[in-house]
Amino acid sequence: MISRRIFALFSLFLLLVVSLQTAVAQELSRSTQSALSWLKKMADAPRRHNYSGTFVYYADGHIETSRIVHKAGPTGEHEKIEVLDGLPRIVFRSNDEMQCYLPESKKIYTEKRWFRKFFPDILPLPLDNVDENYSVKEIGRERIADHECQVLSLIPRDTLRYGHKFWIDTATGVPVKVAVINGNQIIEQFAFAQLEIDGDIPPSQLKPNQSLISGEWETTKLLTSILSEGELPWQVRNLPAGFRKLVEMKRNLTEKPALIDHIAVSDGLATVSVFVEPISKDAPSPVSGFFTSRGAINIYVRTLNDNKITTVGEVPLETIKLIGDSVVKKD
Image (cartoon, rainbow, N blue to C red):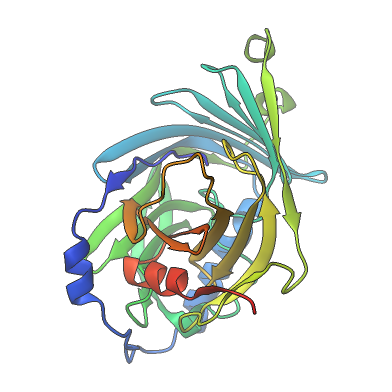
Protein backbone atom coordinates (compact mmCIF):
# COMPACT_ATOMS: atom_id res chain seq x y z
CA MET A 1 0.00 0.00 0.00
CA ILE A 2 2.81 2.42 0.87
CA SER A 3 5.06 1.78 -2.07
CA ARG A 4 3.03 1.72 -5.27
CA ARG A 5 5.33 -0.58 -7.17
CA ILE A 6 5.28 -0.06 -10.92
CA PHE A 7 3.41 -2.76 -12.85
CA ALA A 8 5.26 -4.26 -15.82
CA LEU A 9 3.82 -6.83 -18.23
CA PHE A 10 5.67 -10.12 -17.81
CA SER A 11 6.25 -10.96 -21.47
CA LEU A 12 8.27 -14.14 -21.03
CA PHE A 13 5.35 -16.46 -20.40
CA LEU A 14 6.81 -19.12 -22.68
CA LEU A 15 9.96 -19.17 -20.60
CA LEU A 16 7.83 -19.97 -17.56
CA VAL A 17 6.11 -22.82 -19.37
CA VAL A 18 9.42 -24.32 -20.44
CA SER A 19 11.06 -23.95 -17.04
CA LEU A 20 8.08 -24.91 -14.86
CA GLN A 21 9.17 -27.88 -12.79
CA THR A 22 8.50 -29.65 -9.53
CA ALA A 23 10.23 -27.91 -6.66
CA VAL A 24 13.07 -29.99 -5.26
CA ALA A 25 14.21 -29.31 -1.71
CA GLN A 26 17.87 -28.44 -1.40
CA GLU A 27 20.00 -30.24 1.13
CA LEU A 28 20.93 -27.17 3.14
CA SER A 29 22.23 -27.14 6.69
CA ARG A 30 19.86 -26.32 9.52
CA SER A 31 19.80 -22.73 10.67
CA THR A 32 21.97 -21.98 13.69
CA GLN A 33 20.26 -20.91 16.90
CA SER A 34 22.28 -17.69 16.80
CA ALA A 35 20.98 -16.81 13.32
CA LEU A 36 17.39 -17.56 14.33
CA SER A 37 17.83 -15.38 17.43
CA TRP A 38 18.86 -12.47 15.20
CA LEU A 39 15.77 -13.07 13.07
CA LYS A 40 13.51 -13.02 16.13
CA LYS A 41 15.20 -9.85 17.38
CA MET A 42 14.55 -8.24 14.00
CA ALA A 43 10.88 -9.31 14.03
CA ASP A 44 10.36 -7.92 17.52
CA ALA A 45 12.30 -4.64 17.18
CA PRO A 46 9.73 -2.50 15.27
CA ARG A 47 7.21 -3.18 18.03
CA ARG A 48 9.56 -1.93 20.75
CA HIS A 49 11.57 1.02 19.40
CA ASN A 50 11.03 4.56 18.22
CA TYR A 51 12.61 5.29 14.86
CA SER A 52 12.51 7.93 12.16
CA GLY A 53 14.29 8.32 8.86
CA THR A 54 14.19 8.16 5.09
CA PHE A 55 14.22 4.92 3.15
CA VAL A 56 14.45 4.04 -0.53
CA TYR A 57 12.55 1.32 -2.36
CA TYR A 58 14.06 -0.11 -5.54
CA ALA A 59 12.64 -2.60 -8.07
CA ASP A 60 12.48 -2.94 -11.85
CA GLY A 61 14.62 0.17 -12.32
CA HIS A 62 12.10 2.20 -10.28
CA ILE A 63 13.20 4.12 -7.19
CA GLU A 64 10.82 5.56 -4.61
CA THR A 65 11.74 7.48 -1.47
CA SER A 66 9.64 7.60 1.70
CA ARG A 67 9.93 9.26 5.09
CA ILE A 68 8.84 7.35 8.21
CA VAL A 69 8.22 8.31 11.83
CA HIS A 70 7.36 5.50 14.26
CA LYS A 71 6.65 5.69 17.99
CA ALA A 72 6.19 2.72 20.33
CA GLY A 73 4.94 3.16 23.88
CA PRO A 74 2.27 2.38 26.49
CA THR A 75 -0.55 3.13 24.01
CA GLY A 76 0.91 0.89 21.34
CA GLU A 77 2.40 1.85 17.98
CA HIS A 78 1.82 5.07 16.07
CA GLU A 79 3.33 5.79 12.67
CA LYS A 80 3.44 8.18 9.74
CA ILE A 81 4.83 7.24 6.32
CA GLU A 82 5.04 9.84 3.56
CA VAL A 83 5.96 8.96 -0.02
CA LEU A 84 8.25 11.70 -1.34
CA ASP A 85 8.31 10.81 -5.06
CA GLY A 86 5.49 11.00 -7.59
CA LEU A 87 1.95 11.58 -6.42
CA PRO A 88 1.92 12.44 -2.69
CA ARG A 89 0.67 9.71 -0.37
CA ILE A 90 0.69 9.84 3.42
CA VAL A 91 -0.30 6.99 5.71
CA PHE A 92 -1.06 7.43 9.40
CA ARG A 93 -1.30 4.35 11.59
CA SER A 94 -2.48 4.00 15.17
CA ASN A 95 -1.91 0.36 16.10
CA ASP A 96 -3.94 -1.47 13.43
CA GLU A 97 -6.08 1.49 12.35
CA MET A 98 -4.75 3.04 9.13
CA GLN A 99 -5.60 6.20 7.20
CA CYS A 100 -4.17 6.84 3.73
CA TYR A 101 -4.32 10.45 2.51
CA LEU A 102 -4.15 11.20 -1.24
CA PRO A 103 -3.79 15.01 -1.37
CA GLU A 104 -4.05 15.31 -5.18
CA SER A 105 -7.52 13.76 -5.27
CA LYS A 106 -8.56 14.87 -1.77
CA LYS A 107 -9.38 11.28 -0.81
CA ILE A 108 -8.85 9.42 2.45
CA TYR A 109 -8.99 5.64 2.68
CA THR A 110 -9.31 4.05 6.12
CA GLU A 111 -8.68 0.40 6.84
CA LYS A 112 -7.94 -1.91 9.74
CA ARG A 113 -4.65 -3.68 9.15
CA TRP A 114 -5.08 -7.46 9.11
CA PHE A 115 -1.41 -8.36 8.64
CA ARG A 116 1.94 -6.73 9.49
CA LYS A 117 4.06 -6.28 6.39
CA PHE A 118 5.41 -2.77 5.90
CA PHE A 119 9.11 -1.96 5.89
CA PRO A 120 10.85 -2.06 8.29
CA ASP A 121 8.19 -4.15 10.09
CA ILE A 122 8.27 -7.06 7.63
CA LEU A 123 8.52 -10.23 9.72
CA PRO A 124 5.59 -11.98 11.39
CA LEU A 125 5.64 -13.33 14.92
CA PRO A 126 6.00 -16.10 15.84
CA LEU A 127 8.62 -17.37 13.38
CA ASP A 128 7.77 -20.99 13.98
CA ASN A 129 8.50 -22.64 10.64
CA VAL A 130 11.04 -20.37 8.95
CA ASP A 131 13.81 -22.95 9.33
CA GLU A 132 11.65 -25.54 7.53
CA ASN A 133 11.65 -23.43 4.37
CA TYR A 134 14.86 -21.36 4.62
CA SER A 135 18.40 -21.89 5.81
CA VAL A 136 19.27 -18.82 7.90
CA LYS A 137 22.95 -17.88 8.09
CA GLU A 138 25.00 -15.10 9.65
CA ILE A 139 27.34 -13.71 6.98
CA GLY A 140 29.22 -10.93 8.73
CA ARG A 141 28.87 -7.29 9.69
CA GLU A 142 28.45 -4.21 7.48
CA ARG A 143 27.90 -0.51 8.11
CA ILE A 144 24.66 0.82 6.56
CA ALA A 145 23.37 4.41 7.03
CA ASP A 146 25.90 4.87 9.88
CA HIS A 147 24.62 1.79 11.74
CA GLU A 148 26.63 -1.34 12.41
CA CYS A 149 24.55 -4.20 11.05
CA GLN A 150 24.51 -7.96 11.38
CA VAL A 151 23.90 -9.43 7.92
CA LEU A 152 21.65 -12.48 7.61
CA SER A 153 21.10 -14.59 4.51
CA LEU A 154 17.92 -16.66 4.09
CA ILE A 155 18.44 -19.31 1.42
CA PRO A 156 15.26 -21.08 0.26
CA ARG A 157 15.26 -24.86 0.58
CA ASP A 158 13.40 -25.27 -2.75
CA THR A 159 12.38 -23.30 -5.83
CA LEU A 160 9.02 -22.25 -4.42
CA ARG A 161 10.25 -19.09 -2.71
CA TYR A 162 12.75 -16.27 -3.03
CA GLY A 163 15.87 -15.76 -0.97
CA HIS A 164 16.27 -12.82 1.39
CA LYS A 165 19.07 -10.79 2.88
CA PHE A 166 18.68 -8.65 6.00
CA TRP A 167 20.97 -5.98 7.46
CA ILE A 168 19.99 -5.68 11.16
CA ASP A 169 21.07 -2.91 13.53
CA THR A 170 23.20 -4.75 16.09
CA ALA A 171 22.14 -2.58 19.03
CA THR A 172 18.35 -2.68 18.59
CA GLY A 173 17.46 -5.28 15.94
CA VAL A 174 15.73 -2.73 13.68
CA PRO A 175 16.25 -3.75 10.02
CA VAL A 176 18.21 -1.10 8.14
CA LYS A 177 18.20 -2.78 4.73
CA VAL A 178 16.26 -5.67 3.18
CA ALA A 179 16.74 -7.39 -0.18
CA VAL A 180 14.68 -10.03 -1.96
CA ILE A 181 16.86 -12.26 -4.11
CA ASN A 182 16.15 -14.59 -7.01
CA GLY A 183 19.28 -16.67 -7.53
CA ASN A 184 22.06 -14.08 -7.61
CA GLN A 185 19.81 -11.20 -8.65
CA ILE A 186 18.33 -8.62 -6.28
CA ILE A 187 14.77 -8.11 -7.50
CA GLU A 188 13.54 -5.79 -4.74
CA GLN A 189 15.21 -3.76 -2.02
CA PHE A 190 14.36 -1.41 0.84
CA ALA A 191 17.18 0.54 2.49
CA PHE A 192 17.37 3.42 4.95
CA ALA A 193 19.45 6.33 3.69
CA GLN A 194 19.11 8.03 7.08
CA LEU A 195 17.86 6.47 10.31
CA GLU A 196 17.59 7.54 13.94
CA ILE A 197 16.57 4.94 16.51
CA ASP A 198 15.14 5.63 19.98
CA GLY A 199 14.99 9.38 19.54
CA ASP A 200 12.20 11.50 21.02
CA ILE A 201 9.15 11.78 18.72
CA PRO A 202 6.62 14.54 19.51
CA PRO A 203 2.95 13.53 19.05
CA SER A 204 2.54 16.32 16.47
CA GLN A 205 4.73 14.39 14.02
CA LEU A 206 2.22 11.55 13.97
CA LYS A 207 -0.92 13.54 13.15
CA PRO A 208 -2.16 15.26 9.97
CA ASN A 209 -1.24 18.94 10.02
CA GLN A 210 -3.83 21.65 9.44
CA SER A 211 -2.80 22.31 5.84
CA LEU A 212 -3.35 18.65 4.99
CA ILE A 213 -6.84 18.35 6.43
CA SER A 214 -8.17 21.73 5.26
CA GLY A 215 -10.87 21.74 2.61
CA GLU A 216 -13.31 19.02 1.59
CA TRP A 217 -12.07 15.43 1.58
CA GLU A 218 -13.86 12.26 0.49
CA THR A 219 -13.44 9.43 2.99
CA THR A 220 -13.84 5.76 2.04
CA LYS A 221 -13.83 3.09 4.71
CA LEU A 222 -12.36 -0.18 3.45
CA LEU A 223 -13.89 -3.00 5.47
CA THR A 224 -12.30 -6.33 6.29
CA SER A 225 -14.44 -9.07 7.82
CA ILE A 226 -12.47 -11.97 9.28
CA LEU A 227 -14.38 -15.21 8.77
CA SER A 228 -14.38 -18.55 10.52
CA GLU A 229 -12.40 -21.45 9.08
CA GLY A 230 -14.14 -22.83 5.99
CA GLU A 231 -16.79 -20.12 5.85
CA LEU A 232 -15.91 -19.04 2.30
CA PRO A 233 -17.20 -21.24 -0.53
CA TRP A 234 -13.63 -21.54 -1.86
CA GLN A 235 -10.60 -23.58 -0.88
CA VAL A 236 -6.99 -23.93 -1.99
CA ARG A 237 -6.99 -27.66 -2.50
CA ASN A 238 -3.24 -28.34 -2.80
CA LEU A 239 -1.05 -25.81 -1.03
CA PRO A 240 2.63 -26.02 -2.01
CA ALA A 241 5.00 -27.53 0.55
CA GLY A 242 5.66 -25.25 3.51
CA PHE A 243 2.58 -23.04 3.05
CA ARG A 244 -0.46 -22.90 5.32
CA LYS A 245 -3.65 -20.87 5.34
CA LEU A 246 -3.55 -17.77 7.51
CA VAL A 247 -7.06 -16.39 7.28
CA GLU A 248 -10.30 -16.15 5.29
CA MET A 249 -11.88 -12.73 4.79
CA LYS A 250 -14.40 -10.67 2.91
CA ARG A 251 -13.13 -7.23 1.89
CA ASN A 252 -14.30 -4.19 0.01
CA LEU A 253 -11.31 -3.05 -1.98
CA THR A 254 -10.72 0.28 -3.70
CA GLU A 255 -12.77 0.71 -6.89
CA LYS A 256 -14.60 -2.59 -6.33
CA PRO A 257 -18.41 -2.30 -6.10
CA ALA A 258 -18.94 -5.47 -4.03
CA LEU A 259 -17.21 -7.46 -1.32
CA ILE A 260 -14.34 -9.67 -2.49
CA ASP A 261 -13.52 -13.12 -1.08
CA HIS A 262 -9.93 -13.24 0.17
CA ILE A 263 -7.81 -16.18 1.34
CA ALA A 264 -4.27 -15.50 2.62
CA VAL A 265 -1.57 -18.16 2.91
CA SER A 266 2.05 -17.98 4.10
CA ASP A 267 5.22 -20.03 4.49
CA GLY A 268 6.17 -18.08 7.61
CA LEU A 269 7.89 -15.31 5.65
CA ALA A 270 6.33 -14.86 2.21
CA THR A 271 2.61 -14.13 1.93
CA VAL A 272 0.24 -14.96 -0.93
CA SER A 273 -3.32 -13.64 -1.29
CA VAL A 274 -6.10 -15.18 -3.37
CA PHE A 275 -8.97 -12.86 -4.36
CA VAL A 276 -12.18 -14.27 -5.85
CA GLU A 277 -14.83 -12.03 -7.37
CA PRO A 278 -17.77 -12.56 -9.72
CA ILE A 279 -17.18 -11.33 -13.27
CA SER A 280 -19.41 -8.35 -13.96
CA LYS A 281 -21.41 -8.51 -17.18
CA ASP A 282 -20.52 -4.88 -17.88
CA ALA A 283 -16.77 -5.30 -17.29
CA PRO A 284 -14.26 -6.47 -19.91
CA SER A 285 -13.61 -10.20 -19.72
CA PRO A 286 -10.41 -10.93 -17.74
CA VAL A 287 -7.57 -12.61 -19.61
CA SER A 288 -7.20 -16.05 -18.06
CA GLY A 289 -3.57 -17.08 -17.59
CA PHE A 290 -2.45 -13.44 -17.40
CA PHE A 291 0.76 -12.73 -15.47
CA THR A 292 2.27 -9.46 -14.32
CA SER A 293 5.11 -8.67 -11.94
CA ARG A 294 6.31 -5.74 -9.89
CA GLY A 295 9.53 -6.27 -7.99
CA ALA A 296 9.11 -9.39 -5.87
CA ILE A 297 5.32 -9.34 -6.29
CA ASN A 298 3.86 -11.62 -8.96
CA ILE A 299 0.22 -11.71 -10.06
CA TYR A 300 -1.66 -14.50 -11.82
CA VAL A 301 -5.25 -14.35 -13.07
CA ARG A 302 -7.51 -17.23 -14.06
CA THR A 303 -11.23 -17.65 -14.48
CA LEU A 304 -13.45 -20.33 -13.02
CA ASN A 305 -17.01 -20.41 -14.33
CA ASP A 306 -18.19 -16.82 -13.84
CA ASN A 307 -15.52 -15.86 -11.32
CA LYS A 308 -12.18 -14.13 -11.59
CA ILE A 309 -9.42 -15.56 -9.38
CA THR A 310 -6.44 -13.27 -8.79
CA THR A 311 -3.43 -14.65 -6.94
CA VAL A 312 -0.88 -12.12 -5.66
CA GLY A 313 2.27 -12.77 -3.66
CA GLU A 314 5.96 -12.24 -3.05
CA VAL A 315 6.94 -15.66 -4.44
CA PRO A 316 8.08 -16.93 -7.86
CA LEU A 317 5.58 -17.27 -10.69
CA GLU A 318 5.74 -21.04 -10.39
CA THR A 319 4.39 -20.84 -6.84
CA ILE A 320 1.76 -18.23 -7.70
CA LYS A 321 0.46 -20.46 -10.48
CA LEU A 322 0.44 -23.58 -8.29
CA ILE A 323 -1.66 -21.76 -5.67
CA GLY A 324 -3.95 -20.01 -8.14
CA ASP A 325 -4.66 -23.20 -10.09
CA SER A 326 -5.47 -25.06 -6.84
CA VAL A 327 -8.43 -22.79 -5.98
CA VAL A 328 -11.72 -24.66 -6.32
CA LYS A 329 -15.30 -24.11 -5.28
CA LYS A 330 -16.48 -26.40 -2.54
CA ASP A 331 -18.96 -29.09 -3.46
